[in-house]
Image (cartoon, rainbow, N blue to C red; front, side):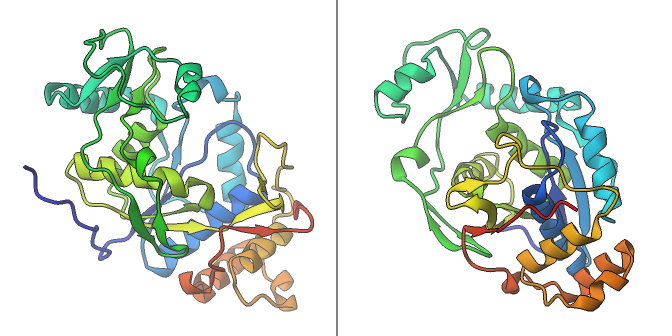
Length: 304
């Protein structure tokens, strides 16, 4: 039995921002970028940018370039070359091959409709049916179910036990690798040891922690920022057509993001240039100041 995975040491902080190139950055994604950047820099750490383009069906042409240009306009400068998931397919396949050799993967041809009809939790129907692992979707046998973890912002998180024990997809029948697999493989390969991101990803975190354990790798610390919502339960997102933040006049949106994250803003901040603003943010940032809530309603979109 492999040794138990342990929480990664924070002596050399490595964090990341990982947007999908499905549209321009909006205020909600700015909060995630700024929160992860400030936490990395306040801890004298590295901040990486990863373009999560693994789901090629959602990619919008040139959105990655627009995202990177926007980050630079906000003085959010990354420390290592930008990584694209579509350039790392061999890495993901190597992981799948390793799991196959351990008999931890099986083929599945159940549809979403079929799974929804039985309550939405997959029950392992295909596990003993010996489906073709070259043509069918691939499911990972859950060996390290995680039902509880501690979040640095949201506190103790409890996860639905049935969902935690589910054998989940790691490769789709169309050949695309699943997000739950690639995000963990990427974080392992890049040495990420603290993940600061939006609270919409709290539930998948338990599954990702399980995979870190299954791959016998240290588990990063997790800190899930409150979501910016237009109304309760309605987060700002590209799917909801949240407006893009301004690259030409970034200061108002950046100061609004600081305020959202609990920083002590003041009227004099408008007199600073964007680099000075970001330096001020790094100096004032403290993870403990962030509101310990899953979402915060904003009255308007601070885009300009």
